[in-house]
Image (cartoon, rainbow, N blue to C red):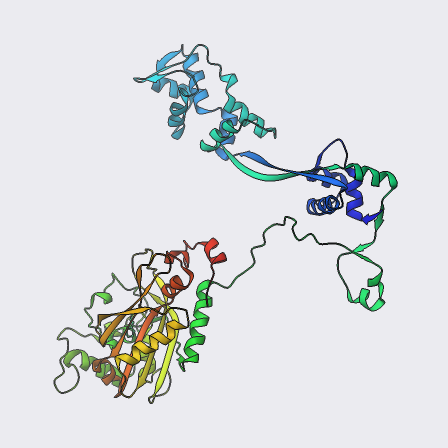
Length: 498
Ligand code: PHE
C-alpha cells in the first residue's frame, strides 16, 4: 500500500493495544501535531486506525493558588497556629501566629469550619483534635497540579476554581489505535507515496501533474480560528452614507475638528450665554485664538446677535464678545463646516441650487450611556435652493433612510436657535422597539442666512452615524460600537446591511 509520508510514519508509530495521543505521536514521529491530526483522520477514513476523542479538563494554578501552594492555605495556617497554641486561642493571636494578612484573614475564616478544622466563635479560635492538615484535599490537589499530575475529583476542582485558585479549561484529547486492517496493512508493507500539496506552474508545464498524487484536504479538521481583519462597522456605514449622499447629488465638505467658536456657534445665532457654550458642555482648548476671521462677516454676525436682522428684527440684548468668538474648542457639531461653506470662506461663493454634506466627528461633554458617546460621527448636510419647504426636508430624509432599509421615521417639532421650524428625527430600534433619536434638522433662519449673504432657502440637518448603525446592526448599546468599551465580538460578527 502506498500512503503519504505522514500517514506511513503515523501508522508505524501507532499501536493496536496501546492508545497514543496526538501529542505522543507527534513527539515520536517528529511531525507537527496538526500534521499528525490530519494524517490520523485520513487513516481513520481508510479504516486503518481508530481515533478516540474525549474532552479533558485541564487545571492550572492561578498566582493565588501558587502562593497558597507554597505558603499553605490560609485556613490550614490558621489551624496549625491554633493547634500549636494549645487548641483554643484568641483570634488576634491565632491570626498573628499564622502570619495571615489582608484578605487572607477572611479566606481563612470562611473555610475554617467548612473543612472541619474547628470553630471560630466570639473571638476565639478552637482547633479540632482529630483534624489533620496533612490530609487537606485542596492543598493536596494544588500540589498535584503543580507537579503536573491529574486531579480527577471534579467537585474538588470546582471548589478550587470558585476560590480562584485554579483555572479550568477544556480541550479535546484524541488518541489513536491501529485497527485490524491497519495491522494487516503494516504486515503487508506500506510505502511512502510522493504526494504534492500544491499545483505549481512547473508541474503543469512538465506534464508531471498527471502522475503525482495530490494530498487530500480534510476540510473538517480542527484548525485554530483565524480572526481576520474586518472593516469597522462605523467605517463601512460612513462610506455607504457618503455613497448614498453623492448619489443624491451632494458634494463633500471638509474642515477643522478644533475651530473658532465663531464658526461653531456665533454664525449659528447661538447666544454667547447659551448653556451649550459653557465649559459644562464643550471642550475648550487652551490654545491661542483664531486670528483670521472674515471681517465683514464678523461684523454682520455681531449685528445679528445685538439687533437681529430685517425691519422688525430683534437681537439677544445680551453681551457679545469677539474674543469669545475667536476662542478655539472642539466642535460640538459639524454645522461649523456648513457655516464655513455657506459663507464662501471654505471655498468659493456659492450660487443656488447647491447640496453639501460631511460625515465627520463631533465632540460633546455628555455623560456616557447606551445612546451617548463623547465623540461621535455626524452626518451633516444642507440644501440651498429657492422656495424650499418642510416637505422637501422630510422627503430628503425618507429617501436617505430608505437606502438603509429604514422605512419608518418620525418627526417631532423641536427648537434650535438657528433653525425655524426645527424637527427631531426618530427611528425604531429593530431589537428593542424603542424610539431613538437619530437626528436634528430645520430651515436656517434669517438671522443665520442674512449675515452669510444668502437670500434663498437653506434646509439643513445633523444625523448621528452611530444611531443609524444601531438601527441597521441591532446594537443596543452605542458603547459596543466605538471607544474603550467596544464589544470586539460584536464588531467581528455584526451583520451589517449596507
Ligand atoms: N447641529 C445640530 C445638532 O448637532 C443639527 C442641525 C444641523 C440641526 C443643521 C439643524 C440644522 O444637533
